[in-house]
Image (cartoon, rainbow, N blue to C red; front, side, top):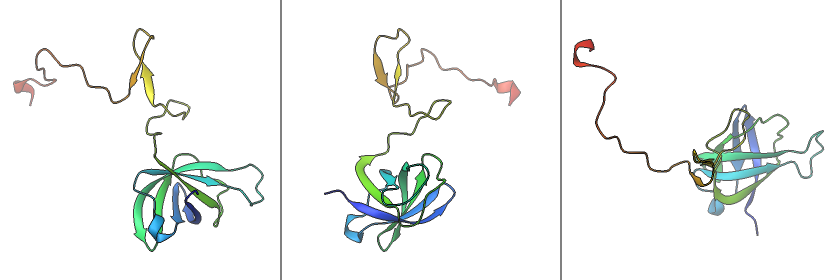
Length: 128
């Protein structure tokens, strides 16, 4: 059974939601807000990320996309997964991995950095 809650308040990209206090989603958890059961011109399926626990089964979230059309009482589903949409390209699409320079393999966005052979500084001692 899915952990379901409801929208309490929407202020721009900030969305407060309520769950059963015993089933409150963890910080950075991805939640889906759906317009099921509401008459809206365009169906809503918005991802939000839990940022803060407010107490009494409530949590404050930040939307990963525009919140136009959200209504108090809309269904919120806990995905059970941390939000992976931390990187976005120039049109807002999620980037989870990037292609290597050769284009043949994929690697994580959080891959180790290339070690420098010698330390360098952008400032010389006389310019500071």
